[in-house]
Length: 131
Image (cartoon, rainbow, N blue to C red; front, side, top):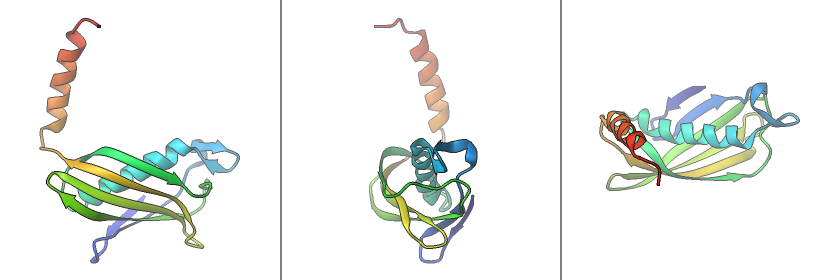
């Protein structure tokens, strides 16, 4: 995936769905589409030097996403409220610009030790007896 943070604040990406992620004949699996949209909204902040994790992700599937066909995506920050950053994304067919899927996400800014804290929590959690 090639990504560019434009001067207007929009992240422009070029990508395609590989055949291995086909969900039906010649179309992407919905999980691939949702996963790519999640990556795109996350990268919208990473390209700005901000670390955040997905709090919520709402995906709308407009049309089947073809496999092995050039796609483009545009993402941008809608607004910010404290640690929450609201981001939107659109996945389109590159040739015609037809919208295939869109998403809105609430990203939550996290400290740099986020994953270290998670590892510590998980280690302790796995020591607990099951309820």
